[in-house]
Each structure stands twice: as C-alpha cells, then as structure tokens.
Image (cartoon, rainbow, N blue to C red; front, side, top):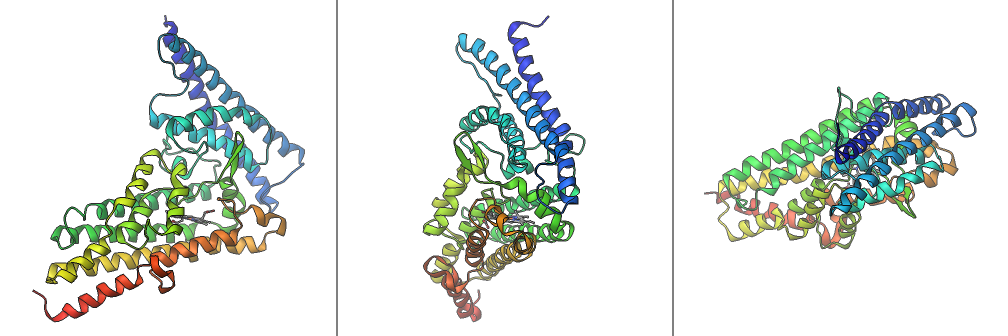
Length: 416
Ligand code: HEM
C-alpha cells in the first residue's frame, strides 16, 4: 500500500505523465488537422469554420485540464511536504522542470498560433513558477524543441506530425550542436596561446564545426518547403502573453555558442552598444547553463587581439603563421555561414513569401515582434560584423584583420 507521500508523489507523476502523453499524441494530432486544413486553403489560419473551431476549443480545453491537474497535484504535495519543512509544486530536477516548461509552452504557443483565447490562461501560473525557479522566460524557446526534448521511439515533442516541422527542428538543432563544437574548440585556445601547435588542431576543429553548420543549412534549405514553413511552422514562433507580459517568439539563434564564437574570434565586441543589446536581450530565452556562457563573454580576450600581440612581438614562427592563417580561415567561414543564413534561409523562407502575404498580416510576421524589415536590418548588421565589412566602423574587426594580414605578409620572408 502507498504511503501518503508516495501517493501524492504518484499523483504528481500521473498528472505529469498524462500531460506528456497528451502533448505527444492528441495535441500533435489536433494541430496537424488544423494545419492541413489551413494549408489546403492556402492560408496561415481559418476563422469561423465550425469544425475547425471545435478542434481549437478541444485543444485549449484538454490542455488546460491537464495543466490544472499538475498544478493541483503539485499544490497538494507541496502543502503536505511544506508542513514538514519544505514543499515543492514542480519537479525538483532542473532539467525535468525545463522540459515541463517547454511542454506547457508548446501548449501556450499552439493556443496563440490558432488565436484561441480563454482556457489556456490557467496554464500561466505553472509556466511562471517553472520559469521563475530557473531564471528564464515563461514560454517555450528553441532549446525546448531541439535540445531539451526527450525522444521516445524516435519521436520528440513537436507541434505537428509534418515532416517539414521535423526537418526544421532537426537541422536547426544539428546546427546548434555544430556551433557548440566550434565554440568548445576556440574556448580552449587562450590557455594554450595562439602559437601553440595544439591551437592548430583546435582551429581546424573550429573550422570543421562551421563546415557542418553550412552543410546542415544547405540541407535544410533544400528539404524545407517554403509554403509549408511560412504557413504551418513559422506561426508557432510568434510572441505570446504569459500573465500580463508578452514574451517574444522562439528563434533558432537562442543559444550562447554563436555569441561565444563572435567574441572569441574578435569579430563582435561586448563593448559595442549594438552587440551588448544582442547579448542582453537573449538571456531569458537561452537555457540556464547558456546564461553563464553569455555572462563570461565580457571577460574573454579575443583571439584576434592575441594574434596581433604575438605577431607584433615577433618572431612570426612557422607555427604562429600557420595558426594565424587557420584563424583567418575560421573568421571567413563564420562570416560565410552567417551570410548563408541571411541570403539562403531568411530571404527565401521569410522575406519572399512575406512579400506575397496580404498587407494585414505584415505586422505579425516575426518571432521578436518588430516589423520584418527591422528584424532583417538587425540580422544584416550581424552578418556585416561577422564578415568584417568595412562599414562596421569602430566596433568592426576589418582594420585589425587587415593589420594581422599585413603582419603576416611583412614576416613572409623571415619565417623561422
Ligand atoms: C528556414 C530556416 C530559418 C529561417 C527562416 C530563419 C530566420 C531567422 C530570423 C527571422 C531570425 C531573427 C528572429 C527575430 O528576431 O524575429 C533569426 C535569428 C537567428 N537564427 Fe535563424 N532562421 C533559420 C534557420 C536557422 C538555423 C539553421 C540556424 C543555425 C543555428 C539559425 C541561427 C540563427 C541565429 C544565431 C539567430 C540570432 C541572430 C544572430 O545571432 O545571427 N537560424 N533566424
């Protein structure tokens, strides 16, 4: 026979399992039916169709019931354990809590996507308490879809059963892992010194990670249907409200490694007010461990500065030259991958279909909220920084990279 504590823990687990089962089955089926209906009609949403309104209402109601059961089971367990000196209404393990936040967020995101008002507001307190315990935004973010999403029988949690959504998450997720590989390699160089033979290995490793990001991006751009993305995937990434506040949508850029690479290479500076804005805005949308990485970027000495120092001090040994050339190749690759994102993903999958969309939808196209041309201009500035374009001014790396190239050219005949 179960003890009271065990029964309450069991009640909590049952409620969590039931919600997880629902998210992986009925929730996905309901979204898929709605998406297929919208897609067949060539639009991102249909309003006022009785059969579809019933599906939307079912989605909102069934999710709200399950979230309420979690909250009730948690409150009972919390109240009883509280009497003994410390209760908890959500899972104790931080990863379990983060995953649960993701699932509640998928439900809230779907309600927003189908423009449903009402029952889902009962999920706000759970989302808010999970988020407060972790120091993150109370909504799903890209990491919930790609990295904190336990697969069962090959399937991870998604909004729909559509292959395009699966491909979008898989290739974005693989790109994040590849960026993390590059960041992990670059991060080890400062303790070795830029003329170390081991640094050459790490710079090749960093380049290989960026090659993978490029390959995954190319595969994604070939496999993903433009209309499928625009009409049935993008709408889930909109901002939505939790409690009184609106939180911006998920985007695949919400991970710290890309910023660590920017700053370690010296292509972007945490002292640049524009780039400071990029870093600060991101905190609540990255996983808790990535917040520490973002914070650490301000302490980093860029590899570019270290190469300039060593080449100026001399001698420019064969190893230092090899490493500097590898470093310059990594910088070029980082710029090229960023330009690919801009010209081969953002432009064809967002800008081109957006230009065809009815005018009234233009205000509601981006994950972050501002109009699409503002978001695109912001992304273009990041591409310019990563590509070291001359127009980046005081915080761009162009003149420092030129100085490094000149130092290598000057030392061309004096190799030791
Ligand atoms: C069809 C595919 C994709 C499209 C249409 C797309 C579009 C966008 C858009 C519009 C933004 C700005 C979001 C906003 O502020 O509203 C963004 C940001 C970002 N995306 Fe993507 N993206 C795609 C795939 C990817 C992939 C595969 C990666 C690789 C990890 C990626 C990495 C990033 C990063 C790092 C940012 C943050 C800005 C930056 O640091 O450059 N995206 N994306």
